[in-house]
Image: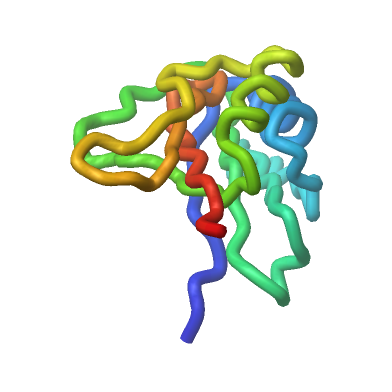
Amino acid sequence: MRILHTMLRVGDLDRSLAFYTEVLGMRLLRRHDYPDGKFTLAFVGYQDETEGAVIELTYNWGVDKYELGTAYGHIALEVDDAYKACDDIRARGGKVVREAGPMKHGTTVIAFVEDPDGYKVELIQAKT
């Protein structure tokens, strides 16, 4: 068994695709409209689905906002340099909600950014 994808419901698919591809640098791997079900699925990631887990963005036509609830935590991405990643993400229009720095009660350097729907994405600096 392996993890295939994590699904997020989004309120504006084009806005979310721009964030994940242009701000975070992922690729749009595939996209398909389901007119009978009135939804669109778009899969984004850094590698092909056969090589690793990806994110499924689900847009239910006509729904522009969701309550995130209290159970959702975050998506985590490894980066070479969390400080530079924050600068790059901010320069591309992304929202940094926790600047890069050591985690509380630890030494791992982390940061958090937020996607257009309010989902948190943690940046974890690779250990050298």
